[in-house]
Length: 340
Image (cartoon, rainbow, N blue to C red; front, side):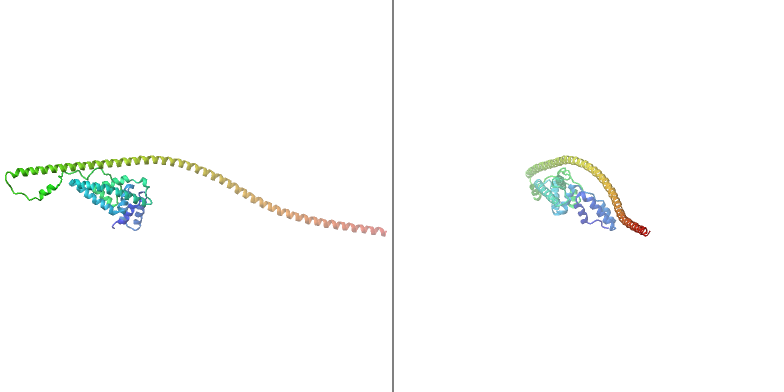
């Protein structure tokens, strides 16, 4: 199988570093589900870039035409360095500074358009600038920048990619000498004049070469100074970030302690509430039982009241019957006495 597509790899390297591993693992899992073991294996070998490398990759992927201009200018600058063409070297060096400055500005814009990018004040733009400068001296770095698969920032430690060879400067006088047809051997008097002209030409060439060497040396010193300044700026930013990290960690410890205390209080409050709810449940149960007992007592009272009423009525009836019987017996006794 051919492996992962260029679009998929670019999509991964467009992903911010803090989400790169998750995106890569998801792509690996998808390739395995599709039965593409080769793609899964190659994707698993991709490594997460640093933030600075991610910004350079973002530039290469979003604005490839700008990176192509950088690579072309880097090739021309290395060629001028090898040939020691002083004016051309100074011209290309000025172009390099302008191009790097413009690319850093473009990187800042691209980062601002990314929702997951770090804040503008925390972008490692010094590392981005150092990497772009390194692309001018190292063809391999330039190719990694162009491909948009850089893993970490590169540093620029000098001018030119190799020690400067001992080349002589090609001047206009020498070109004229080369174009001039060879003279036929002349008189004995012409030979010293020709030697004198050759000596003067050699002297001019040496002086021009010396000036070009000094210009190149000054350019090297300037670049080394810029690199030292960039390192100092990174060190300053690192110290500031370390201080900020210390404050953030102290705040984190404080709020974590507060969270622990609040959690304990919440747990204790929940336990108290559970106890109260249990007591309420028991009281509710006892209330229900009492209400049932009261209801039965009311029923019993009403039944007893009905029974009392019935008993009283029956007793009254019996008393009335007894009184009627007694009255009837009295009447009978009175009748028997009169008869006698």
